[in-house]
Length: 529
Image 1 (spheres, rainbow, N blue to C red):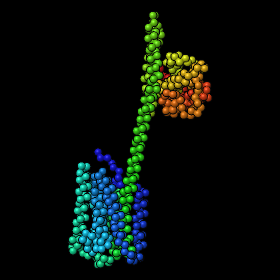
Image 2 (cartoon, helix red, strand yellow):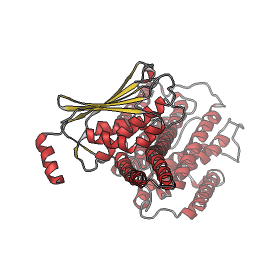
Image 3 (tube, rainbow, N blue to C red):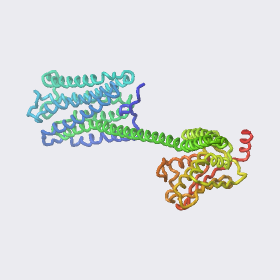
Image 4 (tube, rainbow, N blue to C red):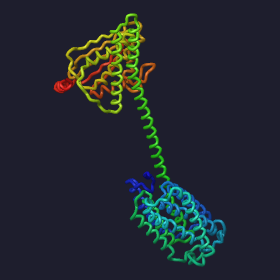
C-alpha cells in the first residue's frame, strides 16, 4: 500500500492561503494599469539591463525546476514532470535570449542573431509556461493510476532535461538560421511591426488558467493560477504596446521575473514548512519513544521494587525453616510456621504482579469489601521476620468495628507494605532511640484513616511536596517509584495520601480512603459467603 505523501502538489490550500492568493490576484492588475499612462515614455538605454534581469530569471526558474524535479522523484507523478519541464524550458531559453540581445554582449548580439531573433525567443519563452501548465493539468488524471516506476525516475528526469535542451536548441536555430520561416516582429531595433504576436500568448495563458481553475485541487494549483494571471497581463500589455527602452519595456521584464518568483517563493516556503513539520514530528516520535522507554523502565523498576521485599522475606523464612529442621531436636512447629510464611510470600508476589499489571494498564481489577485492620495485621504478620531482623517494634492501634471499604486487596496491601518497608529502612540509621513503628486506624466521617508513623530521622520538610512524584527519592539507593505507585493506587481508590514530618522526629504517612456504602458492603459480604 502506497503511503500518503504530503507535498504542495497534494495538499489542498487552507483558508489562509486562499485569502492570500485572492488578495494577490486582486492587486496584480493595479501596477499594470497604473503604468499605462507613462508606459511609452522613452528612458536611457542600459545595455546591462537584459543580462541582469535574465540572470535573475535563470536562477529563479532553475531552482523552481529543481524543486519540482525533487518532488517528482518522490511522488513519481507525470504532471509534476511536465511542470518541471516548463520551468526548465524558460530557464534554458533565457540564456540565448540574453546572448542574442543587441548590445548586451555584442552590438548585434551573439550566436548569429538577427533583428528578429530576440523577440521570437521572447515569444517562445512566454509560451513555455502556459503549455507546461496545460500538460500538468491534463496529466493529473493519470498521476495516481499510472505513476512513473521508481526505477525509471532517474531516466525520466534525464530524458526530460535532454528533451527540453534539444527543444531550446531547435528554437535557437529556428530564430537564427531559420528566421525566414517566421514573420517579422520588429520593424527596427526599437519599434515593433507585428501587431498580433501577443494574441497566442494571451490565448494560451487563458486556456491554461481555465483548465487549471476547473481542476484545481492543491496549493500549487492555486498559486499557478496567480502566476498565469500575471503572465497573461504581461503578455497582453507589454507585448502589445512595448517599444524598446520605454517604461513599458523595462517594467515588462521585471514583472515577468517577479511572476516566476512567486512559484519559487511558494515552493521554498512550503518546503520549509514541510521540513519543519517533519522535524517536529520526528521530535515528537523521539519524545514518545523516550516516554515509552521511561514507562518500560518504570514498570521494570516497580516490579523489582515490589518483588524484592517478598523475595527477601521468602529467603529469610526459608533459612529459618532450615535452621529449625537442622537442630538436634527439629522444631517442626517453627519450621511449619516459617514455610507457611514462604507460601504466603509467593502469594504476595503473585498479587503484586497482578496489581502492577492492572496499575500500568490503567484498568481496575475486581474490587471487593475490605477490612483495613485485617490488611494491616496480615502485612505485619508477613513482615515479622524482616521487622525482627531490623529490631523494629510494631504498635498497632486499630479501632475496632471499622466499616468496610471497597477496593483491590492486593494493591492496598502493597501500599501498606511499601510504607512499612520505607519506615524500616528509615529507622535503620537510628541509634539514639528505639525503633518503633506505630500503625493507627480510625474513622473520619465517611472515610477510613490509616496512619503509619516511624521513629526515624524524619524527612526534610522542603522535600515533602515532591516525595510522591515518580523518580524522586530521599534514599541513597532507590528508584523513587514506591511512593509514586502508592499515590496512584490510593487516588484510583478515590482516596488521598499525605506525609508530614518535622525533619527530626520521624515521619507520618496517612491514607484516607472512602467508606463503601453499607448496603453494597453487605451485598459483597453475602456473595463472599
